[in-house]
Length: 207
Image 1 (spheres, rainbow, N blue to C red):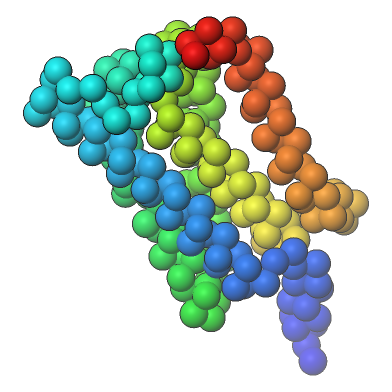
Image 2 (tube, rainbow, N blue to C red):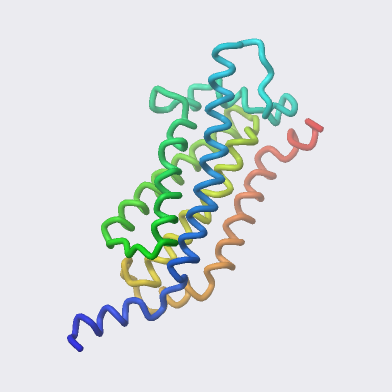
């Protein structure tokens, strides 16, 4: 056995997920993200052809997709934001399917997927901020995408750190891998707390 073989074994010794588990996560999270993005894109199309139509995701004046779709933040790149999800989430699903079929993906592929996910999460943070403080309305389909993006990003980071693709100190690696589910929950708690502090009052009053 060569030294490179030993290094390879050491890099995967703390692999936090089996390939099939990671594949299933990507298929489920990517699938949910695609459905929500497609639904919002479809609502945007229907609003274009029938301007007086009430969107199916508009529950009341505060919980509504219309405010987000009609804002400048809803088309940051010159076209509706959900088109980004419609294009990107199939890549996530396809990656998951490849893992379920036993495909071994190269490090550069994982790195590219992670970079794309980080950019997506940065966009989500921006859209959350503008929803809470500028638009002051909550888009249900948008919130579905917000919800799945955090585990999509976090578990990719955990996989990368645990496998050795992302090189960190052993202590940090063990802390991240060993507490991966706890940190995921903490992230959700922080997001919900932010939402309630920012727009909890209007949300309650809307019902």
